[in-house]
Image 1 (cartoon, rainbow over the protein chains, first blue to last red):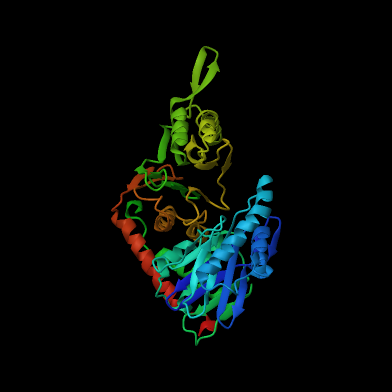
Image 2: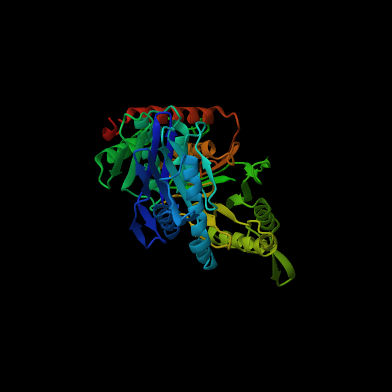
Length: 248
Length: 248
């Protein structure tokens, strides 16, 4: 399992991913699932991946090596470095998903092994504001909008209530990262398939502020404090609410 | 969708079920999913049902009409009124699940419609303490034990974290019902397929205390208060936790 979260807020873009993968419960491993796909003076593009690891690794590698294309001077490569907009970048990633589906995906399905995968694609190109896309198995995708300013992939449900309650498009970045940690804390509390380290990327809309890349390690003191305080708070809060009157 | 919860505590048995069913998002309806299956001076047996409604209704009706059996004087019926223990009751319900699977289930699967269902069976017979079983599609079942004193079926994940955090086998009944409401509140906040009214049954281990049967209506003042206070508390709690130091 895996849990990844993307939040597209007025103040910027946040992407978070855990690092646990597992095949069954007896084969756990650690893989980075937040990938820097393109970096240059005019663009920064990240992806988070969930689902079958062989499929998502194939997609990431296809993207990084460039997709084949016929040009006027023979074979050339198309990559995220030529995409003019984030929408074009999403189309290219969608194409890579389709290529992977036709090779690895079909072979897996013939063995009745799930080839399902999902990708969060986020970043910015040129002077355009940050954008966030949720990409599906067929290579199709939807774009994050202010009404529900986040996407989740992987083990989404345990960590969803806190996002529904607390994250709005005008939530400040630092507050949103904190809510994201609470969401990961909920997922980790109920599913062994989600675990630290958690990789984090924060891209402020304000270009004067630097892009932050951070790893929350297994023993991270701040995350431990958030987890402990949240647990204490829920416990005290539960006790503070009166018992049902019909049970008195 | 549906959400049902059973908790087997030192102080007794709690079973809760919402009343929403839906086929897709454009066909919502209301059905009672907490059923009284047997009631007599020596036994009280309830079931909560989730999954394909035609399958679970078939199972419930088979149980209530009695399963066919050959006796010394021709055909007779076996019902929960003859079961000597809750384990035997679970075996009978398992048999009904298998009969429904062979008829309705197979027909549905031939049309690629999910026939999945799950049942919580709880109650007590004679002087035995209350027992709770989680029954699967194949008619097999597991029994609730003190280490994890609850079972969920249907839309389980949103409402699970609060149970993991707060419900232990020594949790008092009134406190457990309150936690159950918080669990339903989380499920309802994130999934339209779970909704009030919620049916509730509380069977104290102490036989001198009556069995409680209660319906939480759509406008129930106590549930509204729990929901509001919990929301306020999570909001205030989130704000009280300091922001990440690396975002300062």
